[in-house]
Length: 252
Image (cartoon, rainbow, N blue to C red; front, side):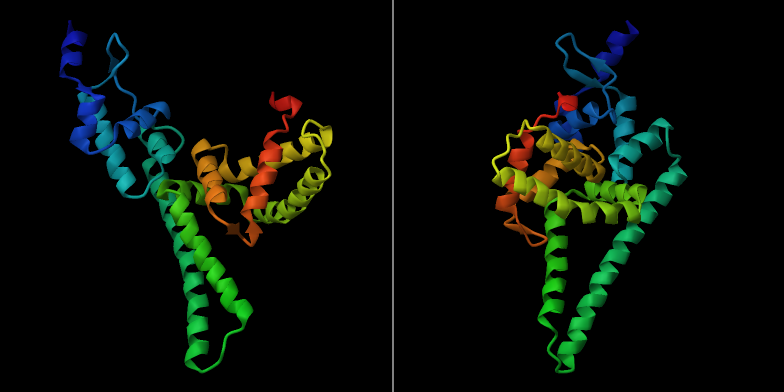
């Protein structure tokens, strides 16, 4: 009887979305990742949110407004992994990294501006590099959400600069090996290609942390941009398609 009364007082997902100005899709996603699961479901499987669920949603929105990642919000609210103090410190660390990156860009632009003011013509290489940094920053903000950027900053801290540099050095070599096999017409099922495909996916997963939403954002950027870091994305897409047809035995 008590449960029936609670269910009658609960909010359906559409009602909660309308009241909070969130999309139903967002609430479904919160349920999928275990951030906010409804306390009840109808016999037909429809979500019903209790007053406690609504309170949790308010807490989620408050922390999200402060810039916290959804994963950290979940850990904080569930009392697992990170304490509220640790989450705050992580956010501070992430903001510092973002500020430092912006400061480096500012210094580069100020250097170009100073040379222009003094009548000096900056070298083409300096201007080109600066524009690449600006354009890449704008691209990243177009394809990744603030939460994803924070997650990627956290991934960078977890991996460490040494491992990141090693991956950056390995990528061009791996791309050339894949290109050579593709142009030679090697069957994607060939063990050589499967080995390359395994390493390709390992490097991608190092970057994304296995997060499918970030993998999709990364894929969207390669699909929609013409060049990235000077790489012809059309040619790169061909290689990605080639790699996707290689099905290593240990990946089913």
